[in-house]
Length: 259
Ligand SMILES: NC(=O)c1ccc[n+]([C@@H]2O[C@H](COP(=O)([O-])OP(=O)(O)OC[C@H]3O[C@@H](n4cnc5c(N)ncnc54)[C@H](OP(=O)(O)O)[C@@H]3O)[C@@H](O)[C@H]2O)c1
Image (cartoon, rainbow, N blue to C red; front, top):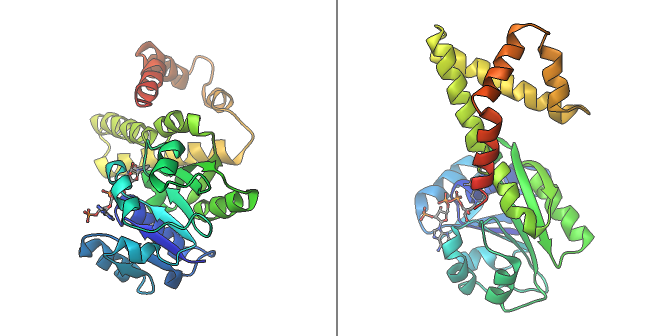
């Protein structure tokens, strides 16, 4: 299975690295295109078997799957510069905010099979939350694409209409998680903990909380109950968060970032 990746930035570069490390694709079957050389050189340094080129047309030619990882405003011109074969190729785009209807118009082919995928920046760690919406795809194609992206984290299929809300929770949401880490660190530092120690304490606690939720049939309320002794310190802190508007602020931030 040959894969052409157009754009070697944060997303395209991480996808190329993730796929090259995966069990499903061999690095020599991946070709990445990008206009500037340094990002291509970095990919070669990561894995010399990855093919690189400054020509998008060359990356797309002969690929079974074309992954578009350029900024949204470049999608139209990039698609115009390659010849996409709707009968033999799948298009996967990570560009935010472009609808299937717009892709079909740009490709001038309603028979195209298109996937819209929204990863988040944790893709660099193989821990991305990947949102996938499919257009004109068979179950086998959906399984194939989910399998590829599961290698870079975890994937979930959603309807195209849910993309903006999903993005607010995941690719914007990761910034709010960093904000929590930063805020908790500030508290730790004020109480005399060294910054890097505080960072580790908070980040590992967050990773642990995520693992509890993801690995068990549980719910945040159940887990909060386990650590809030009646009359104890933790419930005071939890209530203080709500008095200060924490829940409301998170809801507002996520809703406003849906756009
Ligand atoms: N970052 C996120 O959290 C996130 C999450 C979900 C989806 N996305 C989507 O992912 C896409 C890429 O975002 P990113 O963060 O990876 O951006 P990025 O780091 O700026 O990467 C974009 C890459 O595209 C290259 N490029 C520019 N013009 C090109 C052309 N004509 N042909 C081929 N490549 C070209 C750029 O090369 P040069 O820099 O060398 O010019 C750059 O390496 C965007 O559409 C964004 O909406 C991003």
